[in-house]
Length: 302
Image (tube, rainbow, N blue to C red; front, top):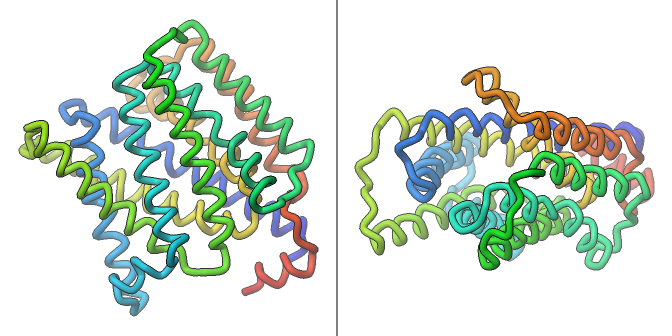
């Protein structure tokens, strides 16, 4: 593939990753009895068997795969765990609008870190797409923004930082097997959620139908989305990678409308359209990776 085709392919994978992630809004909606920690626990119980089965089908030792990414893989798993836990904490301690807005800094953080750490050249189109995307999210949450809780707001910003940092790790590990990240994320989440529930006396006896919905989220939507996102990281720069995956934010309200007839607010529709414009602008811009065409094409052909 040419450099242009490779960039478009990577953009398509990142867009697809966000789309797959967005279906989680359906399973969350049909699990009203599960609190955030219970949902995360059962979601991970769905994700872990999937990655174990995939490893076995590929003839790999699950334990070896868990450590296949080395320190980068471990760092990626920790980033994803921190991101999920901080987002739940933010949703509990600040307004939902604030949680969404502060965590939306992920593309900007990813782009800045990519420039500082990876020395990636971020094009004007990518910066413009990020600014437009954040503007769209601001419109989506307009009218619901409040002071919230300072710690909760900081936690939401931490979500964006963890996601941005993961995009850097994914780029650094693009030439190695990073499949262990998902397994590590599932294992760490199961351990931390179980310990939290034991410490707080939360019940493990939750409705089986809702447990299965959360497990479906983990197995199909998180597992599939992470595979696409990690593959996209081979071809797409860090800042652009996170921005393109914002299709999750755009499509989440769409599925809720279609399946539950929950009509979104006008500002949600307008903001989603603006965010989509920013995502599409970045998707069809040139590749922002600092590699020459021969190197990109060679890696894509592997």
